[in-house]
Image (cartoon, rainbow, N blue to C red; front, side, top):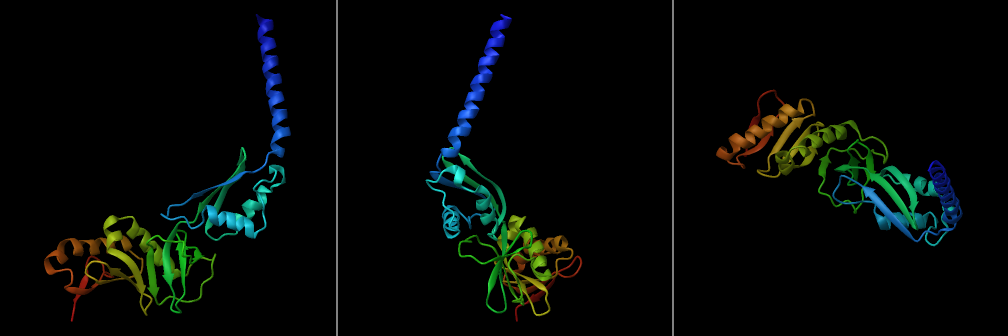
Amino acid sequence: MKQVKILLCILLSVTLLVGLIMGYIYLPKQTCEQISVVPHTNNECIVIGQEDVEEMLANAKIEVIRKQQKDIDLGQISSELKKNPFVEKVNFVHFAGGKLVIDYKLRDIVLNVFTLGGENYLVDEKGIVLPFTMQMTDYLMVVNGNVSDDYKVGNRAHRIIQEALLITKKIYSDDFYKAQFRQIYINSKNELELMATIGGQTVLLGNSENIDEKLSNVRTVYANALPHKGYKTYSKLDARFKNRIIATKHN
């Protein structure tokens, strides 16, 4: 019985060894028949998808379809993808049978910023400046007004934009705020103002300091005061002060 077990173990080991040897002989000769792009993003739309990656490879003169896998430089493909400003991380590039799988994480885009000079750019959740693209179809928070034209793709956004980003994250974390505020305006004093969708008020925040308290005070006004006074009674709500809102009526 013991000899039978030993014999079976030997046969199993030989089988595995033959399988590995055949794999090493066969795989390098296998061709790539298909590209499968797997993007990950928290945005609703995908700014860099299948067609974009295929175009990127074509522009870089990287041929993969019907080429032997041993002749395809996976590191070159990964490096090329990392050049794209919208790609935050390349998770892996590998073969699965005759398929080339390209898996990557896209930056989470939060802001659409318009400058004084009429240009616009995007900002991700980490405050990195990204180029504007028509492929971004999400309804992002708009930031405009006194916004400098001095920006560079790949750099961190200016301080005032970072403050707008912090406020936006607070707004996006709450359904009420998210429905009510879709635009942040930077006035001539570099103060931040929210533009209300219901009522059309300007909500003056000043800066991001004590933003939780400021937004809470604003919510109280919208929940308790405006339903009785009328949403169009006031043109401006000043939330810069502690524990109070100063409301300005329409002229």
